Picture 1 (cartoon, rainbow, N blue to C red):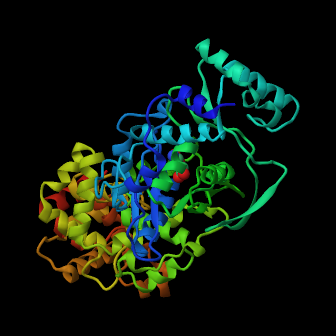
Picture 2: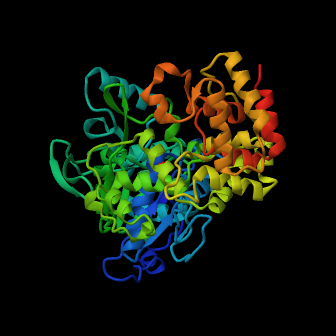
Picture 3: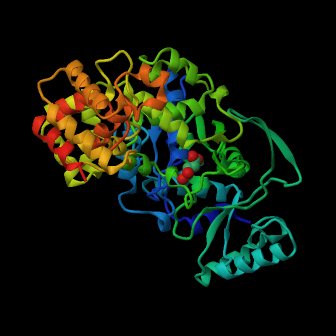
Length: 544
Ligand code: GLU
């Protein structure tokens, strides 16, 4: 077979010689040990927690080693492309503070650009042409129907599906047959002529999973589609080589394709990068663990965290907790230290599924939010409210001085111990609603209507806005005593049978009347913030 002639026929014209790519995309000038990592999403519009998980690991390893992290858009499959997806990926990762050094829509050093695979079509074709010339790739004229029939046959015979061995029909076409097909104008794809043998296994060192045994690839995978665009497998190998990637950290769903990728690196004469396949995120479903699913688990999508108003820092802390087992202890010990100071280690990444637990994230969120100042909290809530909140909620930000008072109280910033009432921006904004007229009856009164009215009336008669906390509480006690409740807790505890209850039951009625809830920050302060008129109105409106 005259491969040179075939290559010219299949991909006519001048292509740069391959050595020129080595000069155009030279090895990076980085310190020894620096890792070049990348994120290579397809622009499908769906960016999920697994992507963030991998992004954090890639970012940490690159920057910690003095290397680079770049963003490449793998848009070879147009069917899956969604408009605005690239912007969505960047915005989502930016929210979680993942900073790329270079890449699509990022800019930066453009030595290794372009970063959209479709813009690199010429490069891939040059490599494909070379493979054809070397007899390592061939045209395949099989139609969709033929391939579907082949698949059915393989399934019926309980054989591995795909284009390999005796099933790789076009691999053995004669020169004459090939040209006849070309003359007839039959569309074709280019396939790799695999030299692998699926009865052979080999051991591969994965940076996360350790040594893994995999089967050699024997599939003649498509490398160039009929429209002249390469497949992901082929494009990524060329790109990772030319963009000088040293370490690929990606989801473990790619482990199955690894033998294909390694064969491609080898046949192309490229040094292989290191690979680390990250375990999938799991969750408990009843008694058993399962992978997070796009269909069943809204928390898989990164947009969930923005919409719910999770603080990106809290999510990042949780991701790091899952990624490196010693992170949690480090962060607990040094909560003030920037996360970058933690020494992230790939060896510490879990080899099997990391268990994702929303309750744990909520706990972390409470702690992280409690560490913010009221001003930081305000900025965070405002950001959320103006993207996702209602108009009524946005109006809370009209008087920031008032809001700061509310936040200082709700966060307990003046006390020794911070309150941990806030989990997300959405929940926090709802939580403070009662300071803005949105008094929602959250908890029910535990006294009968008559008693409730009596307590409210008695307290209203004594209430003075100017009273300090002590005087205020003394009046609550007076009301309690007047209505048969123990004014002092210890009296009640000593002789519970002689009282209707204690001062805390009376305070609870007042608290529910003012806030709609049985638990709240200090009630006197709440009434101070609300102001005389509003506080009184709440008490009298609460009568039945
Ligand atoms: N484009 C692939 C994806 O969408 C990236 C796989 C890889 O990182 O090699 O996940």
